[in-house]
Image 1 (tube, one colour):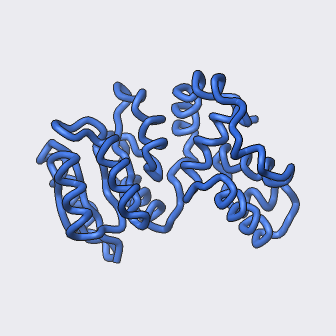
Image 2: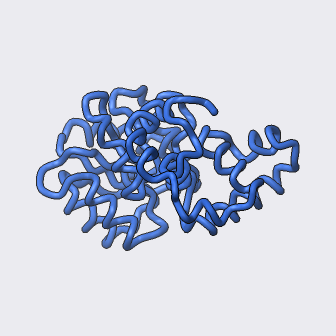
Length: 220
């Protein structure tokens, strides 16, 4: 059973998301929070698997709440909710430790899928819109931080793997691109995470962009 906390300052949004998620056999909403501070408190009390975190809330906003949650509870995954008019928060959310983000006006089926993906320890980064948004808002950061020292520790093969991760490829797709076994690709990904000091694909993507390994907005 995947346990979820919904953090959003709009009661109707929380209730709508709760109804959809509670209708799933493998998902249960265990708490609702109207702001970031309440979300942090619920994590301390309930230790959910996933927090659906709105970016803009009164008091403690979603970015700072995400940062506090990820720092204190490494097993809690945060899925940030955003809208087109606040896209500038996407990169900040990933840097805060979010495992991905979802547009608030996305189909409700996408919400269910996103919760399952994040709960499984994966990053919700594959959709093309996500790559375009992160590319846009990492443009200046990548230009300023091409000397990222963590990337310098990677082997040539591991650097290739990181580039593919940043393009949104799964382990199976990485294996196909590099013509290696999927288990070998999985091992490479694990070593990349360890060397970079990151816990998932979302954080690895941020490092790749900051290091200039990926040209923002491109597929190369």
